[in-house]
Amino acid sequence: MSRHILITGATGALGKGVMPALLASMPDARFTVLTRRPGQQPAVSRVAELQCDLTDSRWLRSLPDDLAHSVTGILHMAADVRWNATVEDAFKMNTSVCAVLADWAQSRCDRLEVFCYVSTAYVEAPSHLKCSPGFIQHEDRLYNNSYEYSKNLGEREVLARKLPSVIVRPSLILGDSRTGEIGSFNGLYTLLRFASQGLVPVVAGAGQAYVDTVSLDTVVDAILLALKRAPEPAGRIIWAISGEDAPRVEDLMNACVTGLNQFRTTRGASPIEPPAVVRYETYRRLYRPWFEQQASSIQKQMLEYIDVFTPYFSMSDVFRPEASHDVLTSPNWRTALPKIVGYWCEANQRTALKPLRPWKSSSISTQPAC
Image (cartoon, rainbow, N blue to C red; front, side):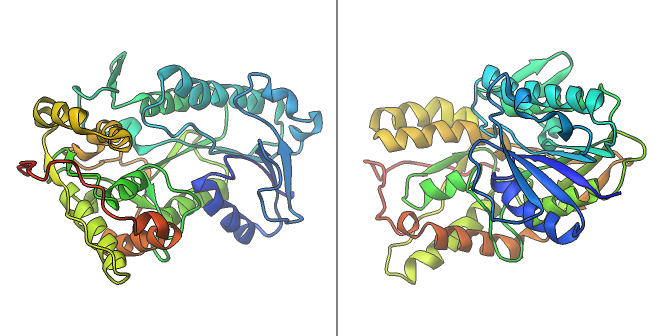
């Protein structure tokens, strides 16, 4: 029986890495991609695009009646990945859309072999920062922000239905470990953008905290594994993480600054200083009030991101998945990060080489946190 995979999120950072791998690993399969803007995919005979806006509550009407009876697999990657989205926005995209798709799959897709939902490892974060602005407590669970909360609810929607489901849980996704390549720059890449201009004098967190990152190729491998065969039992969970080899905050900062400076200095730009790491309570009480008085408009944007990143720079432990779960471990960050930073610099040369825009006062006193 020929395979037919329905895909959401194919044009996102993850999707752009997944599609070539799917085409290569499933030479006899065909794919239908739901997209708001058709024409973004390379022209491939086995890939059909179907215009569909998942943010429209009536999006299910876009699906032709015969699609349900031919689909053998569903890969749901589409998401609102903003860590600072409102609960309402995050719920709409990450939970409600997932529930509607799962209902459709259960009631209509009579040939379905696998339903793969891409969630996040941080639905089971090893620690939480209760004083962070986005902190959420719901029932007996804690979440650092609306993204984690809505993704956990999305998992529940999938598991509550009688579906041959697999959930993939990546941590913070960075570029391909071999080339650094990625389709778009979200999440931690925002820090590179601000740091390259000298706009990050401090980072709130703990220098020895863990930052679990995962390379794009590892997440792609996890998705290929999820789609390879029908899950037994249903509700299989695959993690894509660094785990015990996760870098510390100071390791991540030093690797990023080293990569930025190698790119800048070889092209005649001045090097940047690594940001100091201070506890969030100290940052909020001492640094932020001063920064807010001095900040330009772009510096105020940076302040918002410090709050967003803080929970991920404050993790006191590594992920410890259950023994029954599958775990794919990211390649060593020490060799991958230089390529990832280098790829970002090459793709964003104008930003990476901008003159530094330091804060008005150079006498900011920083004390590293440990």
